[in-house]
Image 1 (spheres, rainbow, N blue to C red):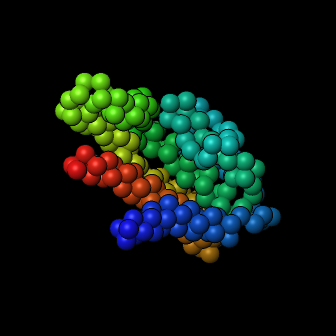
Image 2 (cartoon, helix red, strand yellow):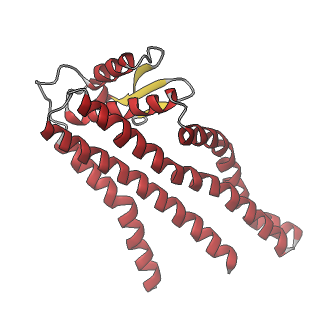
Length: 228
């Protein structure tokens, strides 16, 4: 019972804690800034044009801010697309950072994109495989059959975990080796705003760390079940 309680506390800390902190940091810097010359989408468009990425489009989305290396589109949440705030500017620059990675053929981004394609199919198969364990074992009356199916399911889940782990260096590079230097060297933000932008990017990075930990915990849970 104590182990269950401790596990629940750990999961809550991993899942809820970073999300609450991110929301707090983003909210602190989401106030409209009349001194900013444009919105998040306008800054993204400006930076893309500046680095000769005219083919990359900027769109609004409700699915969360991201860069799609397949369709070459920077997608920003409406708050960041239309917003004229430090949060909007920072997130826009971060997503442009991914476009810069794509332009430079940044290997970790290429590998993550390739794995995402595989994972989209593998995770669906893995879910059905995991649900089919009792059926297979009961139909064949062979415990080994259920074990093999579980191993296959864990293997497919492992791809998703690997993607989460690979995401960390990709996001860090986009934030602190591309977006932040661009904002600083281009004179887009004051020194005080750069400090705020750094906090925003660190908060966002924590969500990826949390996602990786959660994925690893989930994989560990299934492996522990298999060893019983």
